[in-house]
Amino acid sequence: MSIRTKGIIFDMDNTLLQSKIDFSAMKQDIFTLLVENKVLPSSFPVQDHTPSSMLEHAKQFGLTDALYQTSMDIAAKHEEVGMAGAGLEPGVKELLQSIKQEYTLVVLTNNSYPAALKALEYTDIVSYFDFIIAREQMTSLKPSPSGFHFVMNEFQEIKMGEWITIGDSWIDGKAANAAGIPFISYRTSLEEMENKGVKAVARVEHISGILSIIR
Image (cartoon, rainbow, N blue to C red; front, side, top):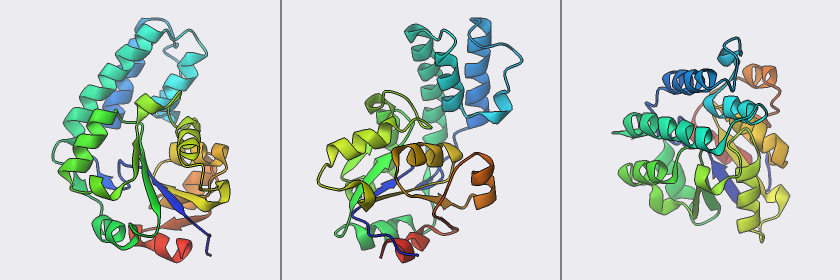
């Protein structure tokens, strides 16, 4: 398949970078905080959620700004440890070098902006991107489409149908679907995405696989 594309939005962790963030530990620490503060019950199906989707649920049950910020502080500590010494996914730099002049390139991550910038600078790929959107620029984290709406507002010269996005997690796909942007699943099976209610236009095992879709 081929999609007429002018802009590409990349997830960061485990799509561009080989993240070592322990998301399970992060989720458990945030869950413990929310249970202790009686925002979520101990019976909450935490296994079915990511840290961000759990927090979106918590917003419906009395999550205060202060508790949200404490949750973000917990996440930031895990991100700092997990992004230390991060490497690139195979073929990322070569791909970015080959498409930089043709497309508007954006990073969209639930990580904090300082953590994202540090990791992209460390891996020497920050210069390839026209924009980095982290949680500070979002009204809600992925799976909310907030970050995608921010991108489209920032680059209004690129029409809705001229964006495409790639990510490894169902929250990336869910956010993209809600924003109306075609989603490519990176390494995660289409079946797994479908089980989470995500529609992907394609799946690629290697990051360079997006070339056959966008060109």
